[in-house]
Length: 304
Image 1: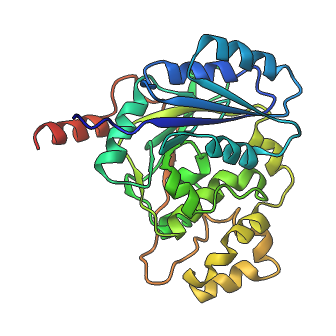
Image 2: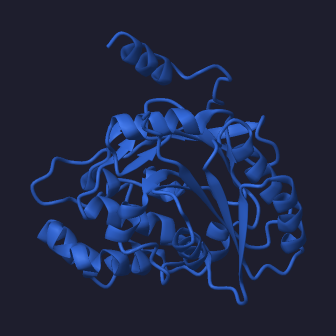
């Protein structure tokens, strides 16, 4: 009997996103879903008409499952709720205001399975404000394995976006999304995944469209001004992995309020690891052709 490929549960936290959620789900339907995959959307007590949009989406797509929080609990809780109801072993979290590129998920899934990864991310984030055809800049991650040193060497790391593929087991081992972390919930899950020894891989080439400039979840939460303290709280169980001098810096009176914001200037070092490398920001818009990294990787597989 032919072995079937494991299926994907797409996870979408939805809060007051009536203007963007349809485009996000349509991008999954556009060449990124297979029979047996599912899309689980958790309405986190939206008050702007999102619920009516979600029911319209569910009528159009049989693979959409809706769950509703009776009170607003935040993005981490919505993501955890969705995963608790997921039936597949592979997960992909897509924020309600972001957009997948056509037929990108099958490429990422193939890479994920070939590399035996616990976590796999696209190499690029294509930032846009009003329309995805008007990309203003992009993040480019380092391809290959992301180490803990890499993760703490700057802000351009897969966890900072939160829109990537991972196993349910990886989520369990990491303790789920930290529900106290506000807008750092996705960063926190990624940190926990790497800190617990899970294999986080960045696929060469490929990307998705990341919306910015509106009242997003990150923008709402980051205004509270607690990012360094929250990140430190996430990291406390793993401080024994960090160089002692850097722990002292992070725990100091000035450091604990600023260390995360200044991570690009002063990376945090890990015992026994080389100096890490963060990704980079690029101002050029992405090409509409297959990125060269993907072409190179596909050719290597065909010649293997």
